[in-house]
Image 1 (cartoon, rainbow, N blue to C red):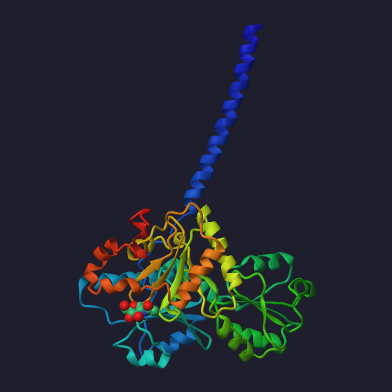
Image 2 (cartoon, rainbow, N blue to C red):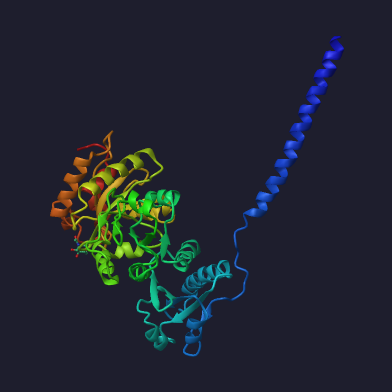
Length: 420
Ligand SMILES: *[C@@H]1O[C@H](CO)[C@@H](O)[C@H](O)[C@H]1NC(C)=O
């Protein structure tokens, strides 16, 4: 009897092993499939980027839906700089390869050799990348990496206005709190919608335009017929564009006036545009990792402050999530002398990257919205600035030494823990 039981048990166990084995082999199959499913593109060596010149530029413009041109300095003589140039070229080649089945042309325009072509095309800034779509020219103001560029070009290829038809699409629209968004309610694709669409083309892909022809979607957003709403990032309530119906110019002007948000997130796709849009030579910069509990909390406080001060035209805070810029994090920590594992807020002079930071290093708690508002007021009034500590540091070589010696210097708060 006992033996029988043991045998049965064994048999049972054998079955279990069988199941386990088959499960194992199944997962092995899946595993090898996964290996095949994650093949990063490698440059295949095929030249896809055109050398644009007098003879071929018109044809290139006609030939593609989008033409993406890098306007560059003449190829340098030194080996090291040549390598850098080749890396940029490689970014374009890889982008061209990845987007091969889209109708996008790529080219290089040499600022010296092709100066005439550059002038005819309206290329202004050497080192910039320009995208031609229909009769428009869009400057790419983002990080020159294939990831960012591919994403950008796919956005430019899309229709500039996205239509919202149902509650699900509406929810997605409502979740996009980081973007500047406009939404209009129209009867259909009539002339008012067309004016809206033409306005949208001027801002694509940096500002998102949506439209709905659906009564219940419009009702949910309290949109009247031919009305357009403007959503500033992180704000709960939209601004209503005055007047309706609106002309293309009405919309364009409103966007130009309201484009600088009270709180704006720095993103790889438009980081240079944001950075160049400084406020009299400075930026108020907040570093906060959204996935970190402290960072998240700090960001919520920042949003509150931004909502309270949304009508202040002199206030614009640039929020940077260090997770989005792994290649810049160590550089920022060194340049600004801050610890980016913690939330930080400070003032940065964009001319020399000189900065001062709100001291939060010794506090158990994050600053309250009131603390932050007081500090921001001090910044806007000039009481907190990047210059006051500079009188000791005329000689930039002494900068570091003097910063560490000076007790009042807010820059040192990171380094000398708690002797205030
Ligand atoms: C920024 O730095 C530059 C160069 O040091 C200085 O001339 C300028 O006054 C500073 N700007 C502000 C707003 O502090």
